[in-house]
Amino acid sequence: MDVLDSPMTLVIGLLDSPMALVLAARARNRSLIRDRWDMCRLALADYTQHREDGSLTSACPSGKTGWLDVFFAKGSVLMGLMLTGVSQSSKGVAMPAASSLRAGITTLYRRADLAPAVLIIAGISFLAHVLVGNNYGYFRDELYVMAMSQHPAFGYVDVPPLVPWITLIPRLLTGNALWAIHVISALVCAGTIILTGLMARLLGGTGWVQGLAALGSATALLLLGNGSIYTYDVFDAFWWTLAATILIVLLRDERPQRWLAFGLVAGLGLLTKETILFWGFALVVGLGLSPQRRLLFTRWTLFGGLIAFALVLPFLLWNAANGWASFQYWASYSQNHSAGGTPLDFLINQILIMNPLSVILWGAGLWYFFSARGARYRVFGWAYLILFVLFIAIQGKSYFLAPAYPPLFAGGAMLFGQWRVRWRRLVAAYPVVLAVSCVLLVPAAMPVLPPVVYAQIYGKSGSSGSQQEAGDSYGLPQALADRFGWEEQVALIAQVYHSLPPEEQRVACIFTSNYGEAGALVQFGGRYHLPPPISGHNAFYIWGPQGCTGQVIITINIAPQDAARGFSSVTLAARTSCDACVDFENHAPILILRQPKAKAPFAALWAQAKHYD
Image (tube, rainbow, N blue to C red; front, top):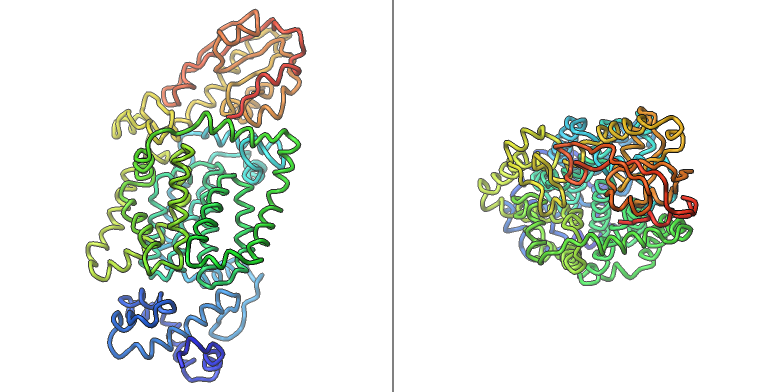
């Protein structure tokens, strides 16, 4: 009888047989086992699926497979017990769950059975982000999120409420200090890297394979850039990756109860950014196309969906009470922000934004999931292809697809692990080359170099294509250029405001063209004794005119000819000057508007200021 076909016999044998002592000794010398059987771990990892194909015998030293059959089977049961909550201890005593934070982290690490390389890579990433976290300044969307945190709600026009809620923590503790919010984004980015390594471990990867998978995420330029910005995107990538990790466990164990955890993560993802709906759709369709489709049609799938729906329900109710503002936003966004271009352009941008050399790794991951060895997890190959085609069809931005890459990095690392058996030196050189390429390219994704130095090294053509509509005197990409000029802009507006007669200052309002300018005024305006800003852009429109009468308005980035349509007196008071910031914030006009032409109250005209995009 095959030992794997008789689980009860196996458990009894574990308790009664002297082999238990051997297994305990082997567990204490796990590093020795890994070194000795490095050449056959890939076969061991898939043994439960391919135990009749002879791969174990061909991969391992002769005469050892019989013992390994028993050892691997019993070791699998032990690992299963660990992962389901039974703590194994040399003294047989379970550690109390709440004994200490350190003990809890240690226990979690042991259960995850992660290679040290994964934590080292994640730690380096975290440290690098923290070290440069105080460089440059606040990113446009960071200012916006911090402004949203001052208006707690169950929803906002363009994003759900979770990230603004989290922002209350650094706001209350540090006043939203730049370093503080970047510590949070660095932690979340490191979490995504750890999950990538964990996925490789769950697929059966060795320590080297886990490290390579983690390195794939750690050197992906767009994921690196997201980790240096405190916005919803870094959280979004984390939820996508955590959902994929749970799905791997579900498929490996064939336990549909895991859909409950998947639903919880999906719900938190929906409270972060609605784009996780694309990931959920692709995974469901991909699972329907895979051999494990039966796991989709269970009551647990429905229960998981209900959990996700319950979490996102307050956001939906907020939308219903606010004219379905988020739906209006996405409808406008799809019209005004389509990426355009051909499928080839989209593919090239994927290669560029992830790291040109990582295409070998994630391309191998796509191959792995469609191979016989990765058949159980084929859903991730289908999900990637579905999203690739879908985003081309809707002309989505290139970065929409970025959170789908960590599973491909894990799958690609598995394939590299197989190649390492044949071409050890060649494959071993790849992680080094990948890391070096990241070091050379990271200044385009993170605030590492002063703008002048960046222009000298990389030239002044870095703001194009996938980097969006950036452009400044130094050629910084938009994700970097949008961190400059905000406080200087507020200081200039303050000069204009305080130049007004006292009677005009008492009634003057400050109107901005976009949420970045308004967010900067929220963050810095207090130190200049400015009134709260108003804007028709996204969430600021929902917050209304805040008592503005419209008698005297200071505007930023509104064209004088547009302002003249509503006011008889239009005075150009100043223009911004910022060499490093994005083009449309440089030389932006600051106007003083007086004598409104409309007879209706300003609040009644507020609807005309609305623009969701």
